[in-house]
Amino acid sequence: MVGVERVLGAFGEHLVLTYASLFLSIAVGIPLAILSLKSKRLASFIMGFANLVQAIPSFAVVAIVVPLLGIGFTPAVFAIFLRALLPIVKNTYVGLSEVDEAMIDAARGIGLTEWEIIRYVRFPHAYPAMFAGIKFAAVLANSIAILTAIIGSGGLGSLVFEGLASFNTDKILAGSIPAILMAVFIDISFSYLEKRVTPEGIGGG
Amino acid sequence: MVIEMLFRRIETVELRDVTKRYGDFTAVDHVNLEIIGGELLILIGPSGSGKTTLLRTINRLIEPDEGEVFINGRNIKEFDVVKLRRSIGYVIQQIGLFPHMTVKDNIGLLLKLEGWSEEEIDKRVKELLHLVALPEDFVTRYPHQLSGGQQQRVGLARALALNPPLLLMDEPFGALDPILRKQLQEEFLRIKEVLGRTIVFVTHDIEEAFKLGDRIAIMRDGRLVQVGYPDELVLNPADEFVAKLVNVDKKFKHLDTLKVKDLMVDVEKYIVEVQRKDELLQWMRDKNIEFAVIVEKGALKGVTDLKSLLKSQDLEEALMEPLVFSPGDSLASALAEMKRRNAFLGVVVEREKPVGILLANEVLLKLL
Image (cartoon, rainbow over all chains, first blue to last red; front, side, top):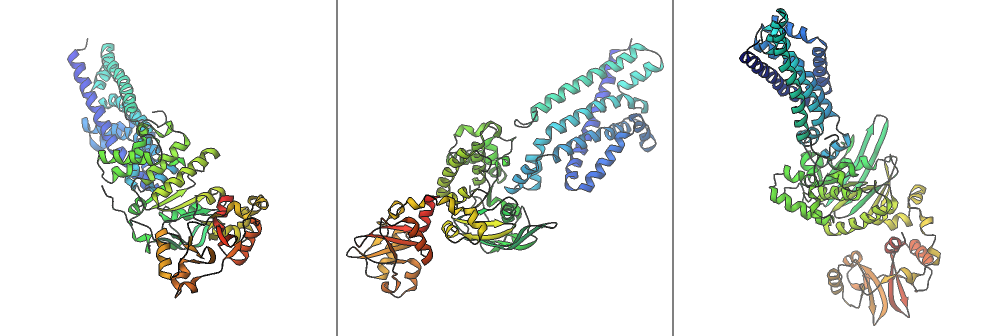
């Protein structure tokens, strides 16, 4: 048997790890998406970089962080952040840039500044795509947070890896079941949030 | 709350040598056009004639490659572009409404951005809904819950929110079915009277042009073919293209059956018996009329208009001998005579007494 305290502690670490990296990705990803609107070249650079990171296996991303930043919690956050960035940047950018040009034109014509157009016209239309991206990033962060136990991030992953190393099924389940539950929780909570913030009158909202 | 407009009223909007090219294609080709404050100027032409492009140079949605645009004598490049656009109402086909905003948010967006309080916005939005004949409880609706005609009204209300002195309208009724379009045109005429502001209106529908326009500018292949009042276009089309566009033959096929008396206007408003120039000037100004029919003991003495009156020494000098018709004359020949003599009016006389006036443009408007 695994102690409840041990599981709760690992779950807490896992939660902090997942959400800290996710918020970091959102905090960096959304401004990057807005910046990408400003110039096609910048957009292709940012998308290219994010795509490249996405193409690398998660495990390799986690590994490559070690020679750069060492081991522990912070390098783990950075690895998850890198992987979660793309879905957020890409989806937000696509959402922001695929707003009907005629509507942007009308907004400009009645005298909105570029920033006001982003805020009042582009963003409300980008919400569905943006939230789909964030939801995907959250699920991704949740799963990579298991992997990062290998570089000493702690969390549910340590239980899983310990269990695997010692053929301890209880430990494996104690680590993986909360992670599965959390994935379900993330999916449900973000879907709810998406519904709440997507204004009426926008497709699928 | 008062918003700072770049201009409170429009004296003139002047397009000087405006040219816009897209690669090899010249969308607008050295257009010179002056829009007079207070008028509704129609820009009409087939698709691809450059009318929308020209319109959009006025609010700088399009920057011309050559030429300049002046409002009240000032180059619009001197203005901040956002301020310029907020000083100019802009109405386009229904796509212009924001689908994610309620009617209130659509109309009130600019007010909000200009820092109006919630109560002020509420009040103004209701005022505007009233103006465009929509019920107040529409404020909470979304555009997709409205019919095409209702959306268009909201679009107009939004354009008027900041009370801009100049309105640009790009085929605002283009997407509506014919019956609804007629109805909205009627209402728009009413609103136009109330507002009394300068409007540039793009359409491809000549009926609409004649119905709504004070003056009509006809475009083709990026060039301005002719600008004029409706009667000028019908009576003196610049070329075959204009003649065909205004479709003179078809419109006037029933002209043969009409008599002068069918379309003359009442003379009462214009008839006066005076001796002195200043007396007449004062009278015309009081009545706010451009010309007068002068009689002596009830019999026609002559006609005059403000322009010649102001130029002449006395009344005698300003008097002109008008074209005279009798009520039973054929309208077609009367109009032909007016065209030949380049006269905009004729006096209809019965037993030496003026009984009516034939105004070329009034007649045309009634016929169209």
